[in-house]
Image (cartoon, rainbow, N blue to C red; front, side, top):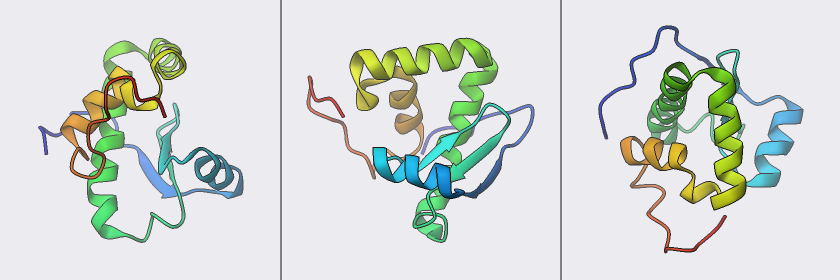
Length: 114
């Protein structure tokens, strides 16, 4: 684990509602951080304390990135990087996984897109 994220305001972490549960399951994500400081977590992941410990810290890194880069800029670049390089090679995700979660999501082979 890396250094903790330093935030101006903590996010609220909650189980995903039906819409977000569908989205997260459909695209294979465990959680999604919203600009209004709510993190929706898949309902099959939320009760798992072993995963939630690092997942919350991972999402906090994204909020640290948002505070540093600005909400609009972060979201623009996040989606651009994901579209251009894939989720696994997105620099924002690489930074967050390097700090929290690398043991659960090993480094992809070069050129691998997810």
